[in-house]
Length: 377
Image (cartoon, rainbow, N blue to C red):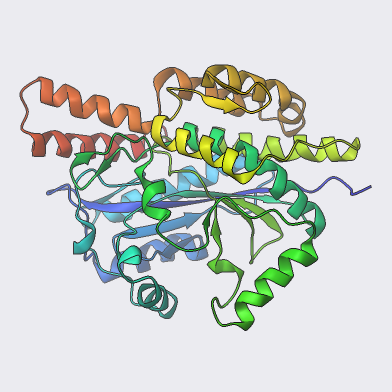
């Protein structure tokens, strides 16, 4: 029997940098800003594909409380350093009104290669997400858990949505980021593999052909990390509220342990066709938690609140084992108050109802995001 994995957790977050005066993206931030962040955070901060983005990553953590403390420190430090330059980070998957064609790629070999290969679909990547790494040392188990956990990815996306606006328009979607990211190759739900060896053979085919350099160019919604012995969840928008990030990370971690327990007991979660899970992925992207997802066992759309309660029951033992019952239960709070997408729309619509011009209403959304990004740190 495969021993229980470490189930360590690490969280990466990407932020937009905005100009506090104009509320627009800082397309040309000061060169020293990243250096100042690195002086305080060392390797836990890094540039992203666009110059107006910055990425942070926690240490390898053994508890969600530890991850929260580390991520709070990272957010607070980036906000403080950016503030010295008249800028602020916003934890939102899209900026409410920025134009993607005004943004500049980071001048680094990896990003220059991506920009050359992806052309316009790459230049449109003015989006931010969060990635959750969970330690699963055994390679065969990592593949098996990836196959099974794909079913739950739309449920996690629905809780994270923070990208209702694009270029000053309400898209009608809760996560427009997913639509932008879908334009890239090697994105979306992962393929199903029978073994680690089969996965490796597919990677070798692409690398030998020169299509990709390595497995880091697989941008699936969940993937075996090419850098760490982890399973990396990537489907979610960046959450504006830190506590929402932690709740979703806790849920992902607990779902993996629940699936490992099934395997330990010679059971498994049923594997559904990718086209079915894709339907729920779209519903999460479009409606968030508002209109339910398809329960494939019942063959019916089920309210999200009901599905969430079922997940909390499934993972109760795992949340208790990890000491994160409160963090997992925070998903109910997300459902009660809405996601960042819901709150952004509420701010925008309230401003319009009060007679605020559209551009100023969008700027009020940015002010809301600036404040909420550092709330409770």
